[in-house]
Image 1 (cartoon, rainbow, N blue to C red):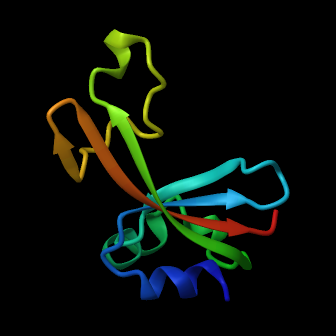
Image 2 (spheres, rainbow, N blue to C red):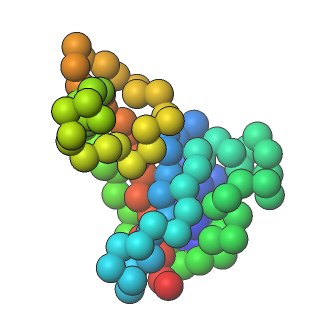
Length: 101
């Protein structure tokens, strides 16, 4: 299966990360799967549409919303609004697509 095939069936999905399978998990690109429907080929995922999918994961990221003040690790994308907020914690769902490369 190619990345574009997976994105087409993940309509309305949360944030998607394209990760290199043989480069120690290097993140190659990120964006919303809905971007395919909304802006077509303007997505930063576009260069990887033809890449072969090796694995697919849904991963939750849980971070303290005052991570900066407390000296904690930042979230992968601090600019993304959390899907859920619990007092001091935010949680975001990512779909990780591991590709050849």
